[in-house]
Image 1 (spheres, rainbow, N blue to C red):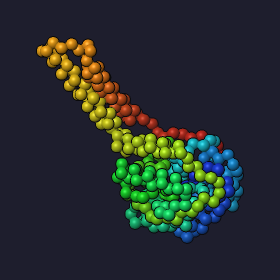
Image 2 (cartoon, one colour):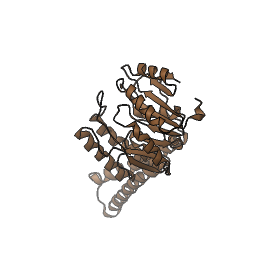
Image 3 (cartoon, rainbow, N blue to C red):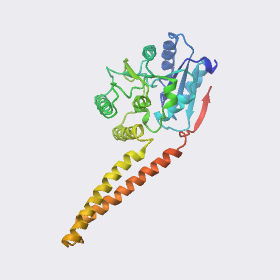
Image 4 (cartoon, rainbow, N blue to C red):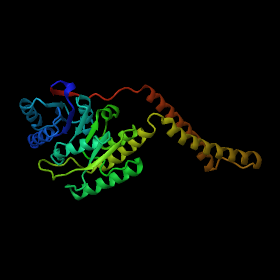
Length: 313
């Protein structure tokens, strides 16, 4: 099928999901058939060390609408989505996790919502079938992210989403920023919505969720706040901090200078003197960092490249 004929692309990042792939393909195919539009299923094998890619080869032989990309090593979900967005051919891109917890039958509902004028529609797992810790941490993550970013949806990190092509072409996904795709889309001016979707208990394998994601999520949130507000004007952030520090340092130094000149007080044993000098130095450094950031922003290049082992077209 020619790439220009594809209307819907389903991008499914997978990592060691050998047992779930056949059922996932069947359920995706059934859901896409109800839409009666040309579609493809693009699997991104994120360096699986089980037999996942062999299963994908078998699926490809029986279904020409299946495509797959295999990474040489595990790069993470953001990398898988970035390559999936780049290589998908549809005007509408749907993402879904490969563990069968997301329900493919919800895809028509996402696209229906998309047709109401939205650019990105995220699933909302209102009734989650996960561990208590994962449910609580997810609620906390969503609440904090909404407070700091102003995005008013309930489940920012749901793997089941539908995008217009313009959205995936506009946002840069790297690191672990897949958690914040609705935030990045909203910042670019796209309209973001959500629909309630079914969520199922994990059927095969084990979750990739771990305690380290708490810390990673915190730093990723800081990253998103920076790149959405100051990535194109870093001097506004660092320059403001530097200016405040410099002014405080100069004020302290001026005060001490007046005391020395007019009151004859000694300064060698005054900790305030060292604080004033330190604030001046820190202020200059912050402004310098901001200027370097401006230079990097002006000269930055494209996205990272990932080592691809095989491609099934």
